[in-house]
Image (tube, rainbow, N blue to C red; front, top):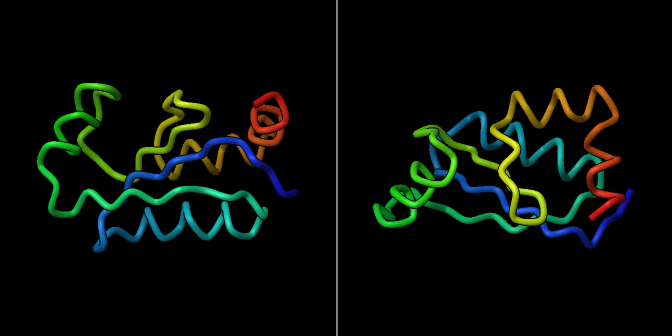
Length: 88
């Protein structure tokens, strides 16, 4: 499935969960924007304020946070990921 939905993945360059999330999106043919926050304290602070989470990845679909890699994989398994992207 190829989509034009707006998907952003906030990552760091040393995060295996980020790699796992990006691999799933790539496997599903879902285009995404990767935003590396490894050395960006301002963006990291924004993520914490926006999501309440200090971990990466943090994934957004159409500007709404869905969580991290585990949540992305759960959405994929349940079919909800495809539904959200189709509705976007």
